[in-house]
Length: 143
Image 1 (cartoon, rainbow, N blue to C red):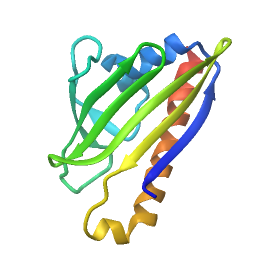
Image 2 (cartoon, rainbow, N blue to C red):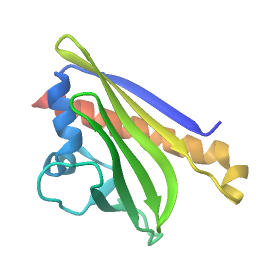
Image 3 (cartoon, one colour):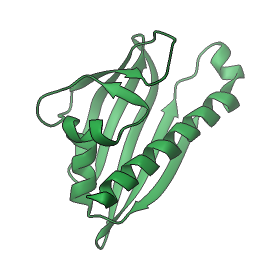
Image 4 (cartoon, rainbow, N blue to C red):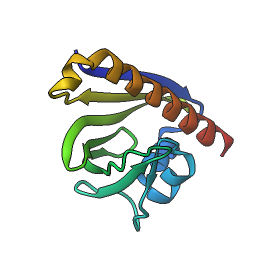
C-alpha cells in the first residue's frame, strides 16, 4: 500500500481553511516543507506551483499541478520531482460547525528502488504531513 493519510481538526470555518490552502500568499505564511514561487491570485485547476524543499541539498526541483478544486471542500494536486510524478495529493475539508476536519492524503508513485524502500519513504511522508497539518492548524487558529 502506498497511500498515506493524516487528519486534524482546525477550530476555524472551512472557508478560512480553504483560503489558506488555495491563496498562494496565504500558503507561504504557514507552509513549512516547501518554499514556493509566488503566484498572483488564487489557484485554479491547471495552476503550476514551482517549489524547493526547505533544508534540502539535493538540488531537486518540485512542481505541484492543481488537479481539483472544490470550494471549501477539496484541493487536489499532482506532485512532480524533477519532472516525474511522485504523488497524487489532496487536502479534503469537512465543515463541522465552526470547525473543519482536514484530511491530508497522498498516493505515492514509487518506482525502482523506492518500492523496496516503501516503508521508509512512507514514514517520511507521514512525518511531513503531520508537520504541515500542525502548521496549518496553528496558523489558522491564530487568525
